[in-house]
Structure formats: structure tokens, C-alpha cells
Image 1 (cartoon, rainbow, N blue to C red):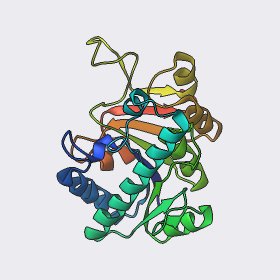
Image 2 (image 1 turned 135 degrees about the vertical axis):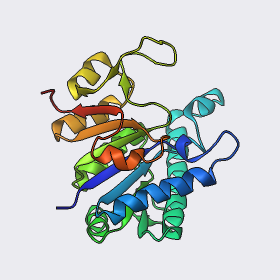
Image 3 (image 1 turned 90 degrees about the vertical axis):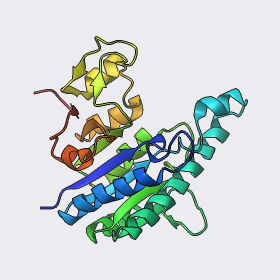
Length: 236
């Protein structure tokens, strides 16, 4: 039986300090996804828009939350279109779908999306869920549930799992090998938003948090063979 996974990427992971897109990163990402697809895995992707729009910057500009959220959604659509093109350039069937109506981008439809995945397309979901106040974590949870994914791969930009405190500030921070959604909710661990954690708990869908900056980690993460944290509905 094929394994269907959803890969959650940050927008920052697609860019650099100087450009909204890092060509080397995108090509390396495409190569890893191709390896996964060639092994018969089905891949969906949700990416953030942080390489274009950062909430902290918009807040300083005095832009209200609703408008800034829609600006962020537009950034995710641009990223979805870019990923679609890069994947196609590497010989991968790919389809960008948007929850917001945007010319030249196919609108998201649950049945069509599942069919694309069944047919071997990497589907890339842009536009969030088309409503403000919901993060790309929530988008990932919803799209994974709707499209019958078996695992969410939470690719982090330089962080190799979930810690009990910020490892950049606390050298003694402890990394969890595994934990459950209840722990994330109770301790308010800053790895996934509470709405997404509750949804994933209710639908019994595991997540694996890992560092995508290490070459080959995306492929390894599917089988939890790299350093990271598995988040379960309940701890064994």
C-alpha cells in the first residue's frame, strides 16, 4: 500500500537572507521529493509565506491582523506556484491548488485534490484555508485530514525536534524523542498551534518534527529514521 504524507514547509525555508527564493534550496528540495515519489510515496505540501510577508513586520507597519493574514495567504500562493514549476522542471508531476480564487491557479477542491494524489501528482496547497486567524499549521492539519494522509512531516529550518525550552536560549534544553498532543496543549510548547494540535489529536494523525536543512532528511523522516520528535495522539 502506498504511503501518503503531507510535508509542511516554512516560507523562510525556501528563501535566503537576500532573496525570497534560494535556487539551490529549491533544487535540493525537488531532488529529495523526486526520490520519495520515485519510491511510490504520495506527497502533499503546505508552505508558509514568511519569505514574502512576516507578521511582526506588518504589525510594526500598523497593518491590521485580517489584512496581514490575507497578505500572508497570497505569499503562500506564490510559493505554491514556484514549487509547482521547480518540481515540474525535475520531471515530477505537480499541481498547485489555492483556497483563494486566483487567476491561473486551480481552486482547491477536496475530491480533485485526492484524485491528483491518487494519480501520482505532488499537490501543493496555497492560500491557507482562505480565512484569517488560521495558521499554516492549521492548514496542514486540515488538508492532511481531508486528503487521508498518514503522517505530517513538520520540516523545520534548523531545529531538529521539539524542546522543552528554546535551545537557542537555553543550552540545557531537552529534546523530546516523542510526546503526545495533550502535552503540547498543556505545556503550550511552541511547535504547532493549538488549533492544529487539537484537530490532529481528534483525528489520530501523527506528526514528525525534524530539521530539513540536513540533506536527505525529508526522505528519512517518512520512516522516522532521522533525528526528530514524533508527536502522537497518546504516548505508549
